[in-house]
Length: 157
Image 1 (tube, rainbow, N blue to C red):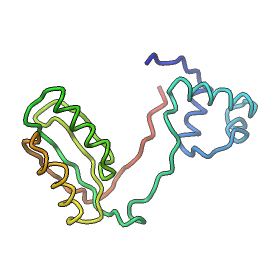
Image 2 (cartoon, rainbow, N blue to C red):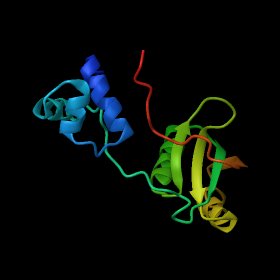
Image 3 (cartoon, rainbow, N blue to C red):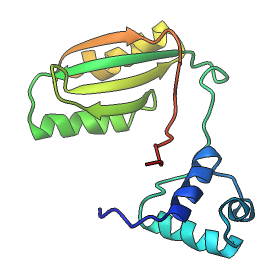
Image 4 (cartoon, rainbow, N blue to C red):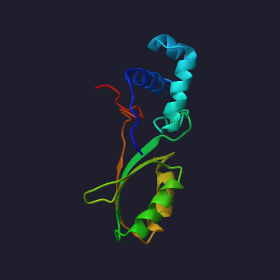
């Protein structure tokens, strides 16, 4: 995908939407110096260009009883495309996996996993790792505190 040309008004609109995706065009327009219609046209263009991928509600894991977060390093048995693609599909289909990165180094993947408790994580590991003959090894760290969690991207210079 080609990166679209973004001007300072686009960046300002994106900053407003990153802070609160429910901000109405009139409010954004007042902040950036555009009419509501101009803001709406720019937002539509940013969506169509793939700059804005989706607009979601950010839920509290604590409020939903999902109080444990795990960082899991996964090493695959073989590094071939079929094995990697199958693991990607498995990860994409599991709601406990919040983030997944294909990485360089000793591990092949790094997962951020959320579960209600250790029993829930054990169930997850059986389903994701122990039942998968292509997983050679995994190492887990338990998060003690959620210091920073977010999807905001740096928009400044």
